[in-house]
Image (cartoon, rainbow, N blue to C red; front, side, top):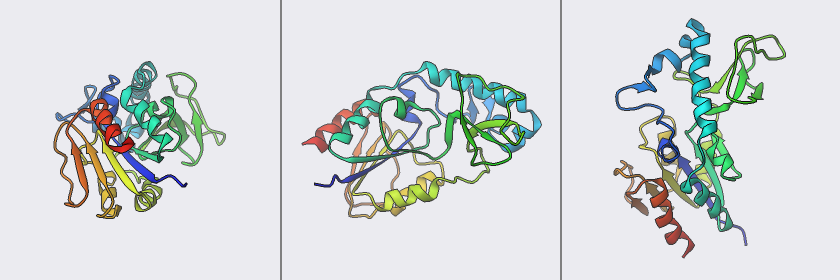
Length: 229
């Protein structure tokens, strides 16, 4: 029998339990930096070395972190469902927990990409990228991160995944960042939607929605009980 499609939208809250800081805290800073100074193309043009140093530190943090229980429980759901994960996170913790189908909306910090051709991607060996590391066309490599003001190329395939979902899970995201937050409007209002977050997440629908007001791992344990039974 064909498995039902469970589409997951994950955000910073799931990685926070692994010790990774959220992308943007309430004070508008990321690890003490103004987002505008490290997460825009203008910042890259102004000071490439500073941007590389910033992402090298973030990459080092990611490689030192470990997947947590919530990541492993999502992997476990593959026994019963066709699980497809759309993540706003730039870490690789879903991959390291063994999940098979992962779409990164905002890029992934363990990859570099060409500044000549966005389609040229390279796995980074270790945590450090350096000035002078170039693609085959001689162009400096940059982190494979979707910066503010840049297009989100994976939003189209993500939209199709949500449209085809039999049920959906939102975990660890406050649904404040667009276009990711807009994905929910593509889920049929008759399809079950589960939302795991310690705070009540504003969702514009009143049918078939189940709130689990817990942190990621605790919420996933409750969800497993609901879905597996």
